[in-house]
Image (cartoon, rainbow, N blue to C red; front, side, top):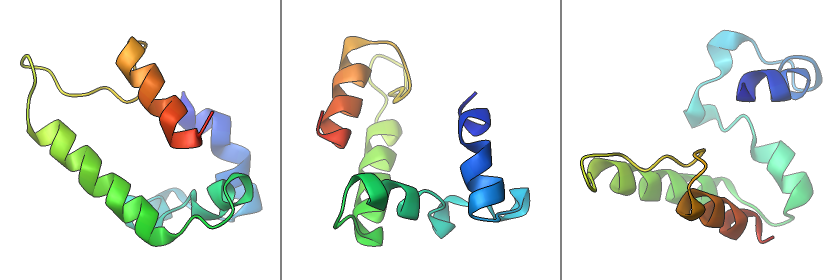
Length: 83
């Protein structure tokens, strides 16, 4: 589970409580800025808007699964991290 993978960062390093893990607070901004210098909060908001558009237009009666095992989801994640 993704939460378990990042529990130490979220709860201990950043001191967040579960109630504070709201996407609008951008809990992973600082974490990702370490890996991608220059990353801004506005980048997160643009990505969120993009994902909302992807998921609001159903393709083949199925929403886009960013964490899925499909080749498209894998390529999308690679493009996001620049790998």
